Length: 299
Image (cartoon, rainbow, N blue to C red; front, side, top):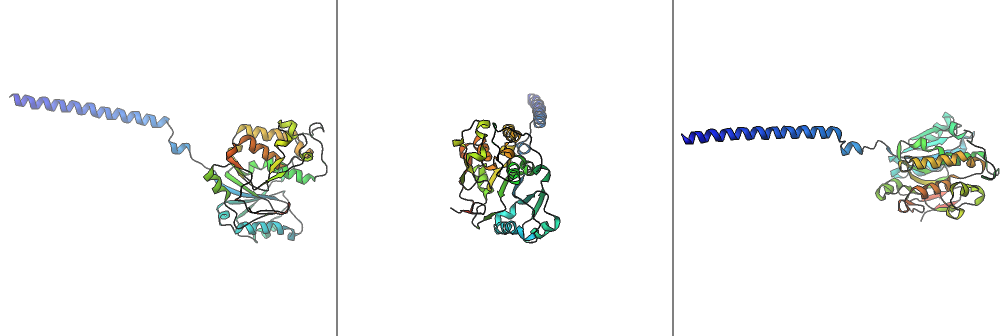
């Protein structure tokens, strides 16, 4: 009889323990489900919707179709680089390259080029007419050149904001077949800006920039060669203080009044908003020839 009672008690204890254990599991599941509802998963927090990269230039339109020879030569040199086909290609223009000219240029290359009309920002009026005390007027430089400088510092960001990286190869830049993919290098080395070499900038064409920024001429006159450059787009344009600095320069009116170039302005921006080890002003991976300066950058 005692044996029977023992069996009954044992079964009762097992049933009670199972109920407690099962309820514990249920509560644990409820807790975990609630936690997952309020806590974003690491995957959703790190989704990157930006396109990998874009290769750009700004060019002008011509009435004579043969004058696109520099641009066509640039495109043909680029098409020989295997890595260039991984990225999008945009050619910005002032609204003066007609459709038949665009087709003529496209027929000369295998690159999937998109033409982008920037006329409305290129021709927009200056936000301010400064005084000579703010920056001395320089009438020696063509208006179109000054507007090019403004575009490549102020306005181009809007046209590349969907990309992680932008590479700029100007119309007169002929890349060498040994030119390295700067985007791959930047990703592997956590670098946000690259250009092949530094240039000297005379004070006459950045008159007043030192007064506005509080940076001495000695600290700004060695400028990046922006005709060939890589920019890690979100690293800069996603920062409110970067946008404020760009707006400060644009609202001064001195790009069009004097001739503040995109090279000294970009030099200031990169030095100001990038750690020293996260940019390279003399990156040897860029290899090619720049026509306007008649200079090779091969070593």
